[in-house]
Each structure stands twice: as C-alpha cells, then as structure tokens.
Length: 447
Image (cartoon, rainbow, N blue to C red; front, side):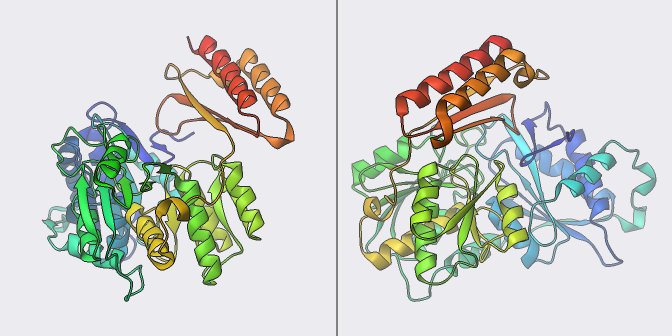
C-alpha cells in the first residue's frame, strides 16, 4: 500500500489532507526524482478552478524552486493539456492540481513524467520515500534556486492541438452542440475549439467561482445538459468533468451515452479505416459485457484491466494498443494523447457523426447494454469490511448465483473510503438481488 498516492495521484480534502506542507514536500521530492543531468530543469504546473488551487500551486512552486527547478505556470487547463504541454515545452515534469470529478472541497496532485505519461508505481513509491525524508541537505544553494513565470499562450496551443486530431477538411458546420464544462478546467478551451471547427456552440458550466466546480453540472451531473439539449433541440450534448479528462455524451433525444458506447463507435470507425494498431481495445473490469460481445461480433477483442485510466494506458503501452478507456468516459487514444482527453474523444465522435450524416442516437447505439447495477458502500477510514467472514460468504454466494453468464466486481475506491459493488447479467432482477445482498452484508459490518 502506498501512503500518499492512490489510483490517480494524491487526492483528499484541501487544507486537510492536501496541505501546503504536503504540496511543498511533493514538489521537492518530485523535483529531486526528476533531476537528471546538468541542464536547467523545468516543471509545468496546471490546475482546475478550485479555490484551493491557489494555495497548492504556490506551495508547489516553493517546493520545486527550492530544489533548483524552474516553474512554468499554466493556470486553469485540462489535465490532457498539461500532459501535452509537458512534452511540447520539453519539461522534465508536469503537474496537474485537480481532484477531477470530486466536489470543490477536495483537491489533488497528478504528476506526469517528461514523456507526458503518468508515473509508474515504482516512481511514485520513490517520491513517497523522499516526502517523508529529511531533504534539507538536498536543497539547492542560494545561487541555484529556480524561477517561476506564467505562460500566456497555452490555451491557443491546446486548442490547435485538439483541432489537429481531425482531418483538415472536416468541419462541424451545421451541428448545434451544447457543451457543459463543469465550471472546471475546460471552461475556456472546449467551447472555443468547437466554435473554431464551425459548430453552433451553446456553453454551460463556464462560470467558475472557485466553489462550483462539478456542482450540478459536468459529466457526473448531466441533468443540466440533458435539459438544455432538449430545450434547444441540439444535435448533441458534451459534458466534461472538472479536469476535462473524461466525457459523457447526450444524444439529440436527451439520452446519455457512456464511455462504453463511445469506445464502440471509435473502435468500429478505426477498424474500417485500418487505424487500430491491434485487433481490439483495452477496457476495465467495469465495462459492460455488452461491449465485449459487440466487439467480438466485429472480430475485435477486449482486454480488461483494473479500474483506473493509468492501468488501461499501461496495458496499451506494453502491448501496443492505441485505443482504450473506461465506462466513466476516460477515453485514451494514444495516437494523440498520453492520457484520457474528454474533448479529443468528443471530436472523434463528432467526426463519425459528420461523415455518416446520421443522428447521434443512431451512431452511438452500437449495442444494448446488459443490465448492470452499481452501488457504493461507505465505511470508516481504516476499516477492512472486505475481510469480514460474512462479507466473504455473501460475495461467494453472489458469484455462484450469477453463474458464468454474469459478472460480479467488488472493489474499494482508490480515492475515498468507499467500496463499489457492481454486477451484470442477462436477468436484471437477479442482478439487483445479488447487488443488494452484497451491499447489505457490507453495510452491516461497516456500521
């Protein structure tokens, strides 16, 4: 078990878990790990729109400059933009200050290596070791301290990057698009990109105030988007999350389209264009069995990994896949990006819609998902409910009742004290009963 890092960086309550002291130490530790060679080292730092971002950013600047690294401040930018700019600006390390889809009270620190990829477990463990070490003797001398400056052109650079993922002759002319930016990191770049490509853009969730990120908007709260799409009779709705690395789509009827359907659309399109580097995609244990069956019908395989886009990406890199993602909307297209990119994924879908000249509801209904039920059980920090005999027995019984035609996935969240219980199968009533029984057993021991 790692002390600070979870499945997606370091995350927790701002000024509770993520304190200025911790942020400073993370900056120092990460800066020391990535000092390789005699050149002048640099780090790029982006953030979302949370109030606590100012505090954490300032503390991390102090940490990095104290070990001799120059800091380039990007301001509010999507996570995939930070990854892209880390490579583009030849930085030694990239940092995104964000808690993604969490409420504004939380914040987090995501770190990228010089190649724009998230760190391996081994590197994160080395950073953790240094966080808890006495670094006084490793600090830079007075003449070697780093400098910090803010970079102003980053929005235009990312917009141009996103546009170039589409063919030059493809435009979004004639499409009415509602985009929900979750009052988060994509609030400037996403509407501008869609407008420059020719779409009629209606933007919501673009008035961040430090407190309203993800509040009743964004991919985790799509009701506002659904309502606006229906009200304006838009062709499509696009919802990003707080740091814009995931996307949820709403079709012209107001029906939600999750990451599984998006992966199916892109996989089929790329297969037809001979763009898949491998004969299949990478998904997680949470992706619907219907997606796996649909891909099988196309002659494509689907490899499952643990939950977390970092694990999807690790498998993609190791085995040569260029398409993967999560049901939650993290879609990774390694031909373009080193992490999930909600805007780029949406653009790939829009390109299929434009080429086929069919409604989004038709393009995105690739398969009927199997009944899938997911429930969360919160427990006291430090508890281990999955080790209790009554829970183990309930889980074993649930698996037997589902049989080979269904799936049961039990997993602790990597970012909060929550256990997620998911089951799927052809018989919805059975799936509901199975999940309820396991959840009841968990709640009894959690109480």
